[in-house]
Amino acid sequence: MLQQSRMLMGMPITVTIVDEKATAADSDAVFEYFTYVDEKFSTYKPTSEISRINKGELAPAEYSEDMKTIFTLSEETKQATNGYFDIRASDGSWDPSGLVKGWSIHNAAKILAERGCKNFCIEAGGDIQVAGTNAAGGPWRIGLRNPFQHQEIIKTVAVSTEGVATSGTYLRGQHIYNPHQRSEQLTDVVSISVIGPNIYEADRFATAAFAMGQQGISFIEQVPGFEGYQINHNGVATMTSGFENYVTNYA
Image (cartoon, rainbow, N blue to C red; front, top):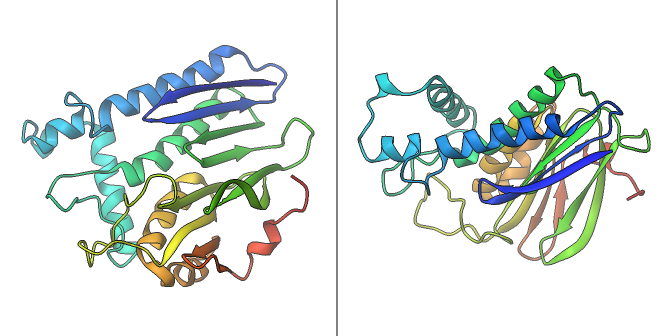
């Protein structure tokens, strides 16, 4: 088994590949891609493309193809979530990080697949994309943390092709907002975990669902192919009707 971790994009990223023929070059290709993404989309790097756009240095006609893709996907997500997903920040700048993370993990998984890898897991800041089986030959088991006791795993889900994303305020504070009420902090819900057909889909809908507050889990329930697990500020959990199908008692 090959496993490597690096700090990139302001978060720990771990690549696990269990294929016998996997080499360090495979994981290196993934980390090189994440480095590229960080250089292009980081709002903290003054030389990044998104920073240059926010400073008015680039016109839309000058955007890179990846940047155009992100803006297009962000608008699609905004429409699909009734405006609860919006990359326009309160100060008028663009911050696509809520979409770029899942999108880039999804693309990194494609890189491994194109290199012939069939069984792997990519985790970036708690968002996960898996493929195939784990080292034991079974489904990948993903632990969902207790937002009030971070070291405690409260649910373990088994997945083999899906993406699992969690949005919340318990680690990073108030970094998600309701675009319809930008000045109000989100306090009703502390976390929502979403299982989707891939991490791009799971991540973007988890972010939007969290912005919806208590109604977020109902939104996930209505989206075909998605399941969710939401915890409110009182520690009460609510899950979609099919979520239990993923839950395993084995860690």
